[in-house]
Image (tube, rainbow, N blue to C red):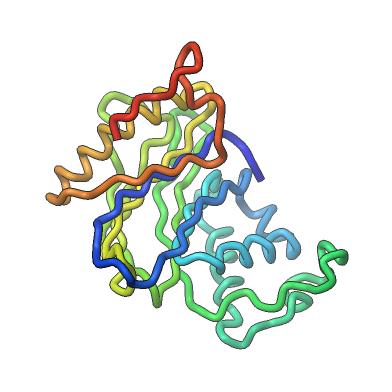
Length: 229
């Protein structure tokens, strides 16, 4: 489940140390839509992965009416704390060599927030955040307007409240860039960072995570992209 460079830039509002840590992930599910969610084995694994995090950015979502997303959320939430066996999710264990099947989907309730389909041409993707409701909640969202047309899929900015964590509030800025545009788009995130500060009237401390590591995130001659963040 790879694909073009996936970047998750998380802007953290610093809080008191010693509180619970948040599990935040980025998951590139290649061309996620009805075909993947209709496959019990595939959708079961996806649900298991998402249920392991407080917030997950899902990339390469190609589901304009969100029907596949809704079906996936139903799968994650269907059993709640009852803990179904993997056989209730899928008819077979994908890797019998593991010696066991996955036991449950989730013991918590999850929800999601998503962008509109984004892209310069007919190929469009949606940014999707799946989050655990008893840990975090959505405070605000906005679509970056991208006045310079720097992004093929402009960031969809989400502010979360996480009262039980050290952060208390955090802002997540997703970017899914094609490899040939990665250097310019990563560099342009600095403008998004400034826009977030201006829009929400607060200083936030930046944390940048690029996954997977990609040699295309270098300028000519192998020089690293700008460190303006």
